Image (tube, rainbow, N blue to C red; front, side, top):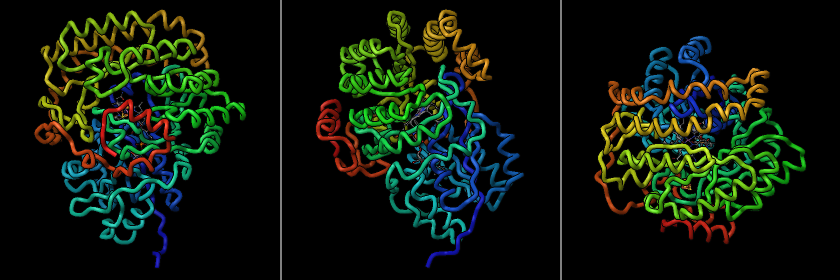
Length: 521
Ligand code: B12
Ligand code: SF4
């Protein structure tokens, strides 16, 4: 017999910006919106607050005024863990009876630790995809908290539920976009304002530094083109960030969505992230999307030499990556590329990178090599972490030993970022973008323009260095002693189910196999 339904007040919270999202972009939290949608579908009264665009004071005001029964924090980013723990403690103090839980990417890999830091202020960490277990979880909270151990993915201080489960189909639920109160605050570069959407979930590759594949058990699932285009048609923003880890892996899927957009006459500007080899394999799809309005493409090239690529287990060769850049230029899409700087770099390495970047027209983004829980490098990296402060794990800080004295490392890093920033966001670029800037300002859209001038106040070697001197309230556990080989099954949040969980055709599966090194399922 099922219990009578009880409506609860459910508050979903996204934590504050990290360094990166203070400058380059700020996006709506689609994962949290999906969790909110699942709670709403289960009949609860739901609100969402995004602390990327609202303040802690706004959050506490909402707690006092609305007194939610349940508060859920999105824990995608490791660097947000201390903020989430502190907010959970403050929430417990104000609303002792509220059920407080967290879920999302990073906390799925660190559930026990997060519960330990919270010391009872977080009742549960929900590992894995958040939509499927929400209804059962909220029923258990309303009627019998002892039955929480029946909720898939639930981890409590003294009990644990069964393994996390996947959503039935990506078409099943739409993100609760209407619950976000400041939608005009989301942007990426000149796509301002910008909404976000998923066409697919998961990644079939297995790069050593990445946890996208370990979270989803190397699965890859797609939204049907019909559903995707229906969703796009309902989005008001003129810009659209496509959240897929690797866009358009399967050519006919990307093409079908594109054709449906063209048939509906939808006019938007798009951003995607993909791999160089996928771009070269599916040229027609990207060409078609360039005509539809694809404006920015982010390519994870990671290193500018073969040795670096091998290290990150990117099987895309350096020359292939170059060919991909050449091709992207010909279709008129702006390319941003990501390069991973290693803390071991000396001045010379930074200089080589600066020279290289000055020679190419693309926007270059630099991130710092950072081992994350849930990745292979977390277990194989031989170097000892120099910091156990979660807040520094945002790939803009060095948490591995630097060859240069730490302050000098930041000087080089910021100097390199400045060169790139001047090149792309500097005067020439602003003039180049004048018309666009004037249009945005006329509409009251100031995100992009503000970003152009804010860089120096956020990216500053003194500030980055000072971040290491702050007192640390919550220390991460160290990884176990480094080992050569890693048992992959132990890394997964959603257990791998092999080929049948990858919605790609046989030739794409072969292509993936040829471009990765892994041996698991
Ligand atoms: C889009 C994206 C971004 C967007 C952020 C969008 C946003 N506002 O959240 C942008 C581009 C801004 C971004 C930036 C960064 N990102 Co990012 N990003 C992603 C990406 C590709 C997809 C996330 C996404 O929206 N997926 C679609 C939605 C539907 O899935 P989801 O958010 O994971 O939500 C599901 C579950 O996690 C869970 N869930 C989520 N929230 C909650 C909350 C509750 C209560 C519950 C129960 C469940 C739950 O349920 C959801 C539905 O199933 C992931 C990779 C990945 N595949 O996860 C990396 C990823 C999360 N990013 C990562 C990193 C490192 C960063 C950066 C630090 C650096 C960078 N340059 O990438 C910055 C800093 C971000 C910041 N906050 O300042 C890492 C995280 C590493 C870590 N362990 O912390 C990831 C895993 C990429 C990777 N390959 O390593 N990112
Ligand atoms: S291709 Fe590699 S880096 Fe990119 S999402 Fe997949 S596993 Fe991660």
